[in-house]
Length: 479
Picture 1 (cartoon, rainbow, N blue to C red):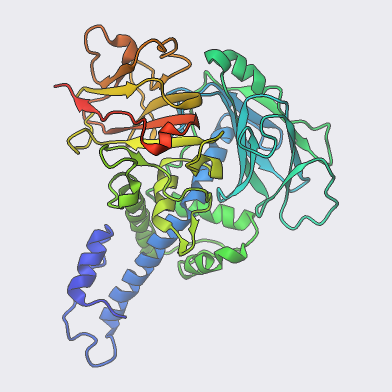
Picture 2 (cartoon, one colour; picture 1 turned 180 degrees about the vertical axis):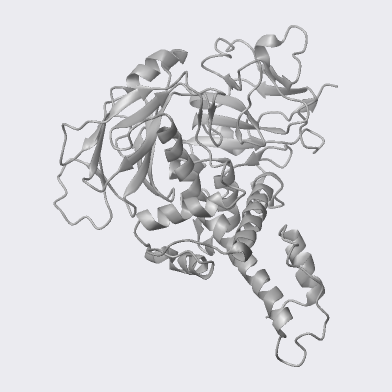
């Protein structure tokens, strides 16, 4: 169906792609055939639309490359070393947090399946493929339930014997992303960091080649794809992955979009000047549409409570691939991956258990966006219904990473900053450019002129978090 000219211009403006949107008279195609000039304009519009859709679909793949690139920039060998870190604002990553130490990065399955062996203990983790598709949970939320176990990750097309005694995940890509965390018992982050070193990761066929863990807690790193996401480099990085990984049958329609844009496995990617312009504008438009889904959606199911401004981050509970009975929920997928990395059912489910809950706060009690130049108070009823612990982290909206300020702190954590608050019924937390008098220990600094948002997390959520018996307040302006 052809879009009428005026509506076509309006639709393209909404997509952020007005360059190819010259006015076309109503009679242009009325006789049946588009003229050469009209065809050129329509061809540009069609390619732009294809590119925007492709950008949004493949964002998780390029985002995973951002994580892998961070490891390379630290000089870590992709087949022999992985970083461990007590994360802080110096570690840029899409909604990374300081709640627990991390261990994670790429594992290459080309030479052998890999074994991840966890000792018994408070570990949580997962394995995703190169497209951030979920393969397997590890630890408390996985099949070992924190009792420890051996997890086997198989490469694409593996036909060898599968030994018994393993929890098995089959990957559709050669490179996978492993992410592991150790919960800080009694708030002891240093002990949790040491616990990560007890994890064993090695090739099944070469068990002596155990991966070495390197502590990068004091080293700045950037795990995002921000440097690529609004320019031609996005497509160049995507082409590298398309070349390196098998074609997936379920992605065939999306490979078709890429083929129409000049990107195809086994062929060089050399867009001409016209296509470069289209791809760069599609990157900006696609990124902006995803940010709209994340931070200014109108979906009613995003709201956590009818009388609060807090929103659910994940909109498809129980399904880590965003599949619903009606199909793939593209907006929920956009919303998640522009804000966060990796997927797991445990990150989305809304049930009592060993998973976690994520709520997004970006508006104050009046419904206005929070402002980096203003000071806010948030009242949190205690106890928070968490079997494990809870936290609230402040993120810079431009980087979607922990906010970086002279204070060098971005989180309120029940096991660290807020430890020992069990005797009070409510705790007030403050966010703003300056600390209210006497509240320095319960304050996180923001930057005037830069937007921010909050994630409220509950680990091991209990029933009051679901049935409305407990809920946090809204951000209240103090000035």
